[in-house]
Length: 339
Image (cartoon, rainbow, N blue to C red; front, top):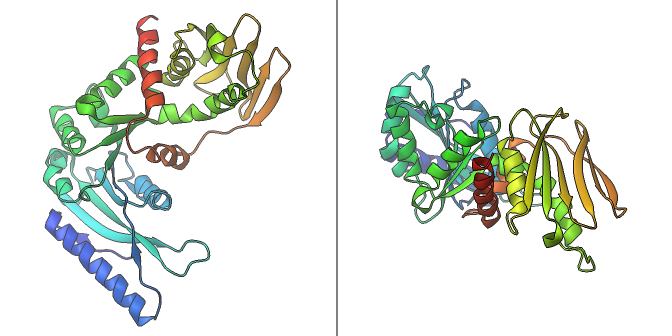
């Protein structure tokens, strides 16, 4: 849908632009004799990025997420190529549910700021969050999250954090110690934190968990006293530590890490050991997984790397804190310190 540049990007100007947008949509619908537009919003989703694409990837992903999580989407792109210190544009993202004539529309705001203007976006964002609804912040601003972030980058990050009820980061490929220190720092003031590395672990956890969902099973999960994790690289990745934390966190099972030459970066296999049974879930190819038990159960799965859409869709389904993640993270910290 067409949009116009708003400069200066002040909250009142942006909200005025949104008002004109909705008025235009309603007028257009009435002229064509169609059902009225349904304006939907369950949260404010803020995405901050310093990627070279000027926020293009994020702005393309938000409309997809809106179908399952209606929101006011705000993309905050920090770019040296910005024409003004801070500028914005507004648009409506609309779609028709299958078999319906009425359009569902959500608001999308794109803000582009020079790096030196990044610490000053607070007043703009504060005036744009939807009152009485959660504010979820997906931070893709690598510079601001880095341990080498400048004071200006830290100040800009803190401004957005102060408005957020939940923060989503991605520690894939990061040093585990630095990654966990970041998650702990973001947890301050009771703020919920999510890590997309944890969401990537869902496929590993579910098949194993389903084994223990069987009420007829006599060898319970608490009987498995050892967890062995095989991972690519010299040291356990955040994902490997999360896996170890989850499978050992409830009854403090013994954990062993092993480095191996896997098919993909990160986690390669999970092995649960009890006195009478061993369960193993492993990669046998780049997109093939094998789950087997020494008691005779065996199954093969097809699994490829999850898309960002799938990972975010999962995390946005949990608006508050995730107790499962909290248990895994706390135990993973203990295991990392013990390495």
